Image (cartoon, rainbow, N blue to C red; front, side):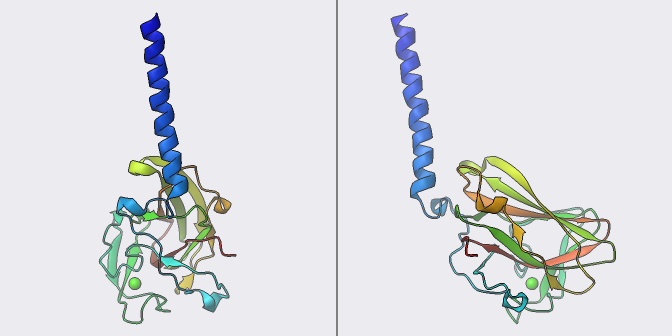
Length: 204
Ligand SMILES: [Ca+2]
């Protein structure tokens, strides 16, 4: 009996140590996943001033598809094609965007995120009747899936335009969130996206 109680105490101490360590990592590190090799939102810009949005945004990894969709997970015929979004928000030399046939989806590479991230925004256009469903995938340390948040659907027009700002749980992320990915799915008809940005701080 004494041995069992000792084992239980040791197990309890180990569990408490693990939980405490994880919380210390989440609270003490800024950004939370800087040591995990993820792309972290450091340089920011104000790309959406043309839409009266003066928030600072960080560009998501290959968020403009100029790297051929490097790190993106593409399904259902999603592919990088010639032709940049018409505002050239990221760079005037950009040449590529992502084509999403109806039913296709694209998931961005994980991007590290601060606890204060509040919204994301991108450029899109679509065929008549198309919708783009946006989901936000939260992962913890060691890439464990913490949750998939429904960011709603947007209805793109036939010409390139900025999406509405997509809120991210009102700035309240799941506990221990280390990274975020964005998943775009074309529903009903074909659509295109380009220049995906995350507001890394709750700035407005
Ligand atoms: Ca582009």
